[in-house]
Amino acid sequence: MIDVIVTGAAGRMGREVVRAVTAADGMRVVAAIDPSSPGLALDDGAGASILTSADLDAALSGGGERVLVDFTVPGAVEATVARALAAGVHCVVGTTGVGEDRWRAAAADAPEGVCLFVAPNFAVGAVLMMRFAETAARFMPNVEIIELHHDRKLDAPSGTAMRTAQLIAAVRGRAPAAPGRETEIAEGARGALVEGVPVHSVRLPGVVANQEVIFGGVGQTLTLRHDTIDRTSFMPGVVLAVREVPKRAGLVIGLEELMGL
Image (tube, rainbow, N blue to C red; front, side):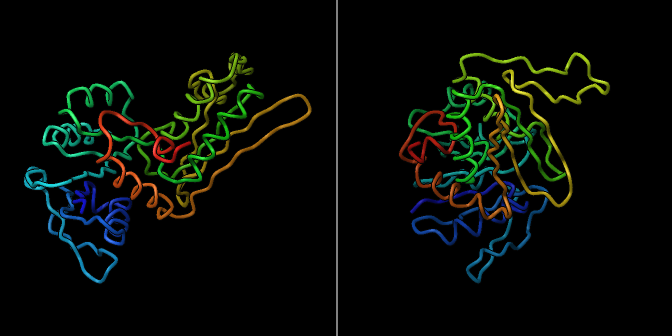
């Protein structure tokens, strides 16, 4: 049995994680941590509830196979993960906005045999979109990304867009110029350059998470698009990560590493 500690448990993603873990075989939620809402009864999706707590140290003091799942904010996640790793607890992190170099440093400080897993997106469809974009970039190097998220998202561009741009940059033979930046009438109209790929971020109420990767070639375009309709789309990936991290050690980045892609 894998004991799961959910941080940010009172948030939208945290609540979904509590329900998904409770419904999955071979794992259970043993602590729901949320310093902003201690004592809140969360529906576990199985007809019972679990109370939130602000006491992370108590949650980390247990024994057995333990995994911490974090969907919080960039300003809090690093300290939480550092404490969990030091306690020998594997970590599954969905919080974006922290650089890969910082995660590498955190994993380097962790005890031997402990895994830090970080993913910019836990939706299987989004991971496939990134993989397809990586393949397309080998043949169509001219590409731009448009990512759309809800208006409460704290980082821009999104972690998914950043990861997509990195995958594209690693495989395309050249980085074509992004025309129009030098003649922008309004600064930033052509988006941010990430690894040489223009990325445009949209933040609107009513949106969950969407991304388009648009490739252009002579007389043709290719558009890859993934739409997240509901946050439950992320849960199969989260459950997969919780199952897999006890079998691994060190830093692992991207759900594709667990999907065998």
